[in-house]
Structure formats: structure tokens, C-alpha cells
Image (cartoon, rainbow, N blue to C red):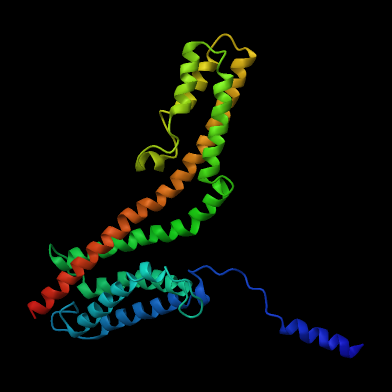
Length: 290
């Protein structure tokens, strides 16, 4: 009996422990956050302790060290777009790479600012530094979006994909076509206008708002409810229009969440390309005037 109990305890100890899901920011117990903090601390120490005739700035040997480190980090950080096309596990899994991308990217604020020696002006170096800050700020937005929007999207539209929403609208529209037959010409025209309006149309700003101020379905509901003759057929049409509007609301929320990702990509990626161009020009000019 004792032997069987001992074997049972040993078997339970040998089973792998169930671990809680770990996000990329917390990867490996915040390893890359700690690495970024160490890097920033070394940069601050060098800036404060290493003497320079004109004060520490990018033209000193330590300034070149900071500049080289910053340029190397920027070049490496841009590789995430290529890296995320390959799903692997282990030390350099996509989660580890993304964690390093975030925390080391934030360390650039310290490294690049110290590289400038706090000497800002209307020049290429300051322009490059400003582009870098824009990339970092939009990157922070991207991290927040990836951390929050997928959960929100799954809550509102997991069971209502685009195809399912379209099918739902088509089903309601078929019922509306039949139910609207007894209506007068003006009311029938309002219902037809509601069915004809494209639920997925509209520019980026419209999708970001998550609403449509010119919603033909809402206009039809408002008009029909103002009618004096509220018979059974009219009430059925209003009920179907209300269902159509509910589906439209889900469509617009799904489009809004996708648009929030689009805003990030339309800013972050082009500014990153501009940063690489400005950084290349800055490096070339430094070596040219050396």
C-alpha cells in the first residue's frame, strides 16, 4: 500500500506543471525589459562619467558608441516584419523576438537622446531623432492595439464573421422585400433605400467612428414609426429593420476594430521607412565630414 502511494506521488511530481499563459511583454520573466534597463543604465553612466572637452555628445568616442548601438538596434528592430512570418519556439521564438523588439525599442529613447548630447537643432540628426520618436510612439500604440483589440474583436464578432454578417443581412433583406409589399410607395422606397446601402462602404474615418450618420436603415425606421397607421404589416417591417440595424452595428464595430489596426500600419510602417532613409543619410554625412 505504501509503495503504491509512493509511486503515485512520484508520478504526480514527474508530470509537467500547468503554466499560465505568458504574454510577449512578460516573456521569460521580463528578461528583455531587464536587458533594456541595463543598457539604459550603462548609457547614462557613460554619459555622466566619461569626460569630454565640450561635454558629452555624438561627436565624442562614446557618442559614436551610442550612435552605433542605436543604429544597430534600429536596423535589427525593423526585421520583426520579416521574422514574424516564421513561427518557431524556443529562445528566439516569435514571442521572444517581439518582447525584445518592444523593450529594446523603448531603450532607444535613452540611447538616441544621449547620443545627441541634448543638442537639438534644425539639422538631419535632430530630424532622424524626431522620426525615431514617432516610430516609437506609434509602436506603443501598436502594442496596446495588439494587446486589447483582438480580445474586443473576439467578444463582438467572433461568432459573426463578415460572411455570416452578409448572410444575415441577405436573409433579413429577403424577408423585408416580402414584408414591404403592402406598404405605400413612399414607405416602400425608404425600405428599398435601406436595403440598397452597402454596409461595408465608407472611408477610413467613417470606419473609425463605428457609426454612419447617413444610415438609411435608421432613417427608414424613424420615418415608418412616425406614420399614423401602425398596422401589423408595418410593425413587421419595422421589426425587421430593427434586426437589420443590429447586424449593421456589429458590422460597423468589426470594421472599426480593423480600422484601428490600419491606422497604425499606415503611420508606423511609412515613418519607419523614412527613419531608415534619414538614418542612412545621417551616417553617410558623418563619415563624409569626419
